[in-house]
Amino acid sequence: MTAATTWSTDNGFEDVAQDALNSKLSELHLAWAMSFPEPEPFGAAIRYRKLDALTVAEFRTGRCAGRLPASVRGGEPCIGILMNLSGQLVCRYVSGKEFVVGPGQLTVWDSEIAKGFEVVDPHRELYVLLPRRRAPQGLTRTALSAGGAVAAGPGTGLLSIAADQMHAIARELDQLSDAGLAIACQALLDTLDSGLAAPAAPARASLLLQVRRYIEDNLEDPDLCPTSIAAAHGISVRTLQLAFAETGTTVARRIRDRRLSVCYRNLMQASATETVTDVAFRWGFTDVGNFSRIFKQAFGVTPSSVLAASRRSEPILASL
Image 1 (cartoon, rainbow, N blue to C red):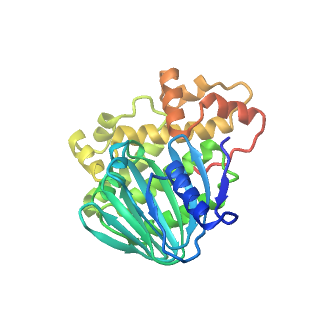
Image 2: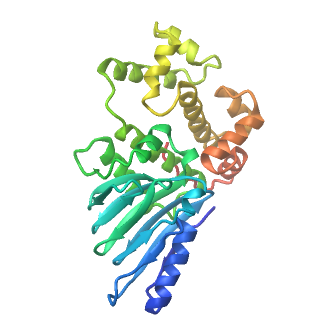
Image 3: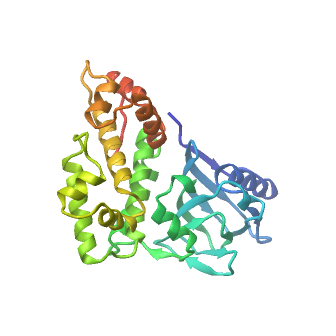
């Protein structure tokens, strides 16, 4: 299991501390070119955990600024989710747009259009950083639109729930297994994706709710697919696909992701005689090799390792 780590500049001299933060941000975030106000004392601390290309962290810092060199934007694009807990943060884009993220607000950004940031007073944040290829399509569109900061406190619906999820992930960073951390982050991405999406028309929203319930009730059906779902609801496959288009995913991916989550839960609770093949086949996966591959992509661990851990009665915390 990967471990949560705490790093800080508290014991370093001023110039050493600043150089150390430059290096640490390049490792955990992006290779920002940092600058610091003089002669103001400076300090920073990061509590973080890395899982493959995913980073989850709690970050606090004094006044500073960062600029993203064009060469950094040439690498693999990534998506950042930032929840501001205290202080003021100014974000800048290559288009010239800038906005302030205040306490209780969050923003989603993309590395290819980010230009820089400025911490204008002591600041504390939670953030998740992941490759763009692993983010929901809707969330990617939001990040690329450079829409600014949004309120995520009580009364903001799904955005408030997403903020609570970020707080919970940070709180449980030491306790979550790798698979549990992957599941919790995926739940955050899905909630945030839905919370930031433009409201669907009432009829389409109602259809989406019906279809999602139908998928949950029929996950064990090996014939569950867009065609069978459309037929069950008396609509065309095209209409079904359009209903899901605004959610940033597809019908087939929704079925696959929900089956993977149920398989993970089943493997945690498997009987002494059940195998990975039994669980995979039960939930509609007919190719065990492919199942193992996409399971690891989703959760960061293999299904056989989850099964083995459950046999040893090891605690694997996850929120499905």
